[in-house]
Image (cartoon, rainbow, N blue to C red):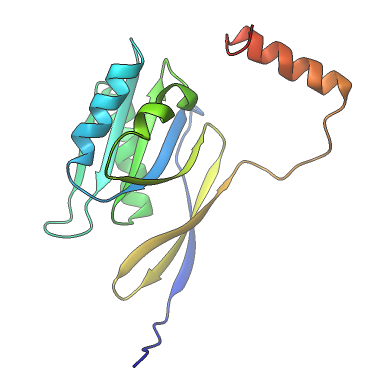
Length: 166
């Protein structure tokens, strides 16, 4: 028999005062903390980062790792604020998400990535009697127009400046 469950929806703002790049995702196992840590340090020399992961069962602790106390604190603060089990925040310095996403995709227990950005983000959370879950994210702002030839030139130059294109 089907049981109806009531829920409430919240929008939780990600705290990111210095507009740092971060990745917010879903993973399913306590082993993720060490595996994500290893994936990050093995793919970008000199990367500074902080990671926090929220357990969804057992002691339901937030587990942390990283090599930057400031970034780890930022990841912890946001993980506690969002309050959804099996989610993680990974804040980055000296690296962009594009540098670590391929390595993260090899982490066997990683389920999905909700966003990888430095934009302002709101996490849309459903709250039931059983707990909280992520419905999605609002990443940045809505489009203001369509790219013209000058915009294309600026985009291409920026990619070359960062070294992503020759």
